[in-house]
Image 1: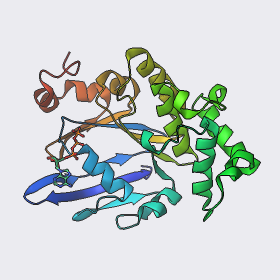
Image 2 (image 1 turned 120 degrees about the horizontal axis):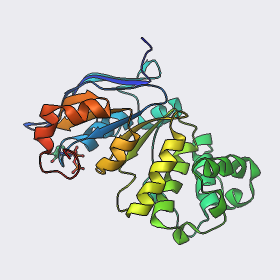
Image 3 (image 1 turned 45 degrees about the horizontal axis):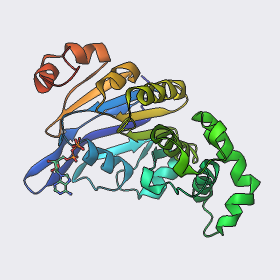
Image 4 (image 1 turned 90 degrees about the horizontal axis):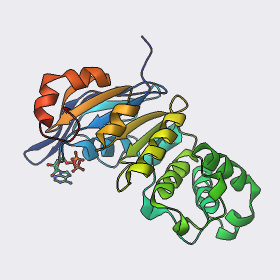
Length: 252
Ligand code: ATP
């Protein structure tokens, strides 16, 4: 059996008396899309926080790319190839799409400090940035101010910024949030095109998207992974059906 790219082993995080992460063991293989789903408050954000290094687990281990990263700071994890999609708030509206990605390339390249005009003129930053924009299908928008992009395009831009460090694993926290049907469909098509080249851990409430994209799905309820399997296995799982009864689409 091949070693997974990312794995957690009996991860535990407590907030007072609450077990937000209850002995969670999950893994993501190279190139696969693994979706993490669960009702509000199930512990998805807490789990992702532990993967990125923002939340310290109480016990258990996290391994990535052959290393124990449980106690590594965030920037070291990013350096190893574990990237979280940037949030819209980190996109600079008055800068063009290309300049935003160039800034992310600059950050990943580890330059201590540079003037912003470098981003506007520096081809060593703009070249790789253009490549990231192509990868998310935004190359035609390279010269537009980020604020002029549609909501869906801004989310694609965030992913382009996450790609700046050439990660092997992308953590995508609700990439479809706030999107209409058409934009969601475009995002699904784009993530499908990205699949295989990058592994993804996808946290998403849009069940249509999850079932269209995921190779495997893990269901969290009250901090515990109650089921993990292929979309067909999850659809047929009794405990999952009970947990989601009444939720849109899941048991249809
Ligand atoms: P949602 O889908 O609503 O974002 P979630 O699945 O991401 O929810 P978390 O945000 O991880 O769930 O929360 C899991 C549980 O841990 C919740 O009961 C929440 O109230 C609690 N929790 C999260 N962060 C903290 C914190 N910093 N201090 C105390 N309790 C917390």
